[in-house]
Length: 416
Image 1 (cartoon, rainbow, N blue to C red):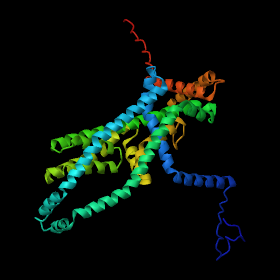
Image 2: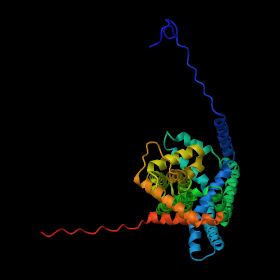
Image 3: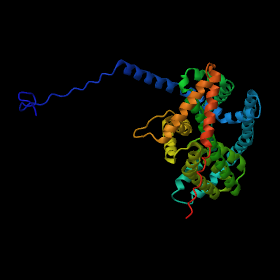
C-alpha cells in the first residue's frame, strides 16, 4: 500500500518513469571492441583461413598413410614423399582421363550445335504453346552463343586461377606442416599449461579422426555417384561414359553446385542420343541427387562423423547460407568438431546432469594427467607432446576395444 502523502497516493498524479541505466565496465567495452576487431580481421583474411583449414584437412587425410609407412620402418621424410607423389600421380591420371575427353565432348557438341538446334526447333514448332520458343531458337545464331560463352569464360577464368592458386598454397602448406610436425606440435604445447596437455592431445587426435571420417564419407558418396553415372550412361549408349562419371564423382564433392555440374554434364553428353534419352538421363540424375541428399549423405556421414541426420541437414543448410560453397564444404567437420569439443572440454549444457560415465571419464583424465606428469617431467616441449599423444592414443584404443569383463561364477543350487 502507498504511504499517505507519497506520490503514488496523490490523486491524478502519475508515477514518474523508471530510468534504467546500462553502464558497462571498461573491461566489457574493451572485450567487445576486441571481438569486433577480431571478426573484421577474420572477414578480411577469410581466404587465408580457408587455405589453412584446407591444409589441415589434407594433413588429416594423409597422416594415416604416413603413419602406416612409418610403422613399416620407413623414414618419415621418405613416407611423406611417397604419399605426396602418389597423390600427384593420381591427380595426373585423373586429368589425363577426364579433361581431354571432356574437351572432345564439348568440341563435338559445338560442331553439332546447328543441327541439334534446328531439330529441337522443329519439335517445338509442332505445338502452339512452344511455337514462340521455336522461333526464338531459329533466330539465335551460333556466333552469338559463342560470344556469350567466350565472355563468360574470360570472366570466370580469373576466379578459376585464384582457386587454383589457393589449392596449390594449401598443398604446399600441408607439406610444410607434415615436415615440421614435431616442431609445430611442440610450439603449440609450449603455450598451453602442462595440466591441459593430455586434453589437448585428445582434441588433436579426435580432430584427426573427424577429418578422416569426413574424407571417407566424401570418397564413399563420390564413388556412388561415379558408379551410378557410369552405369546410366553406358546403359543409354552415351559415349565417353568413363570420363563423365569420373567428372561427376569429383564434382559431387561440391555441395549444391556439384549436383548441378553432374546433372549438366550427364545431360549434355546425352544430347546426341535424342530427346528421349536426354529426358531419361535428366530425370534419373535428378532422382539420384534427391536420394543422395536425403538418404546417402545422412547415413554415410552420420556413421563416419557420429552426427544425427537432423544435425547434418541443418549444418549443410547453415554453412551454405552463411559462406556459400566453402561453408557447405566445412559444415559437417565443423559441426562434428564442435560436438567433440563440448564433450572433451566438459562443457556443461543447460539442464545437463552429471552421470556416472562422466565421473569415470574424469577419473581416467586424472590418471592420464598423473602419468603424463611422471613421464614428461623435465623434458622439452617436443618430447612432452609426443608422450601426451602416445598416452591419448593408448587411451583411445582402450575405449574402442574395452577389456572383456570377467563372467561371474555360476551358482550351484543346494541339493534337496
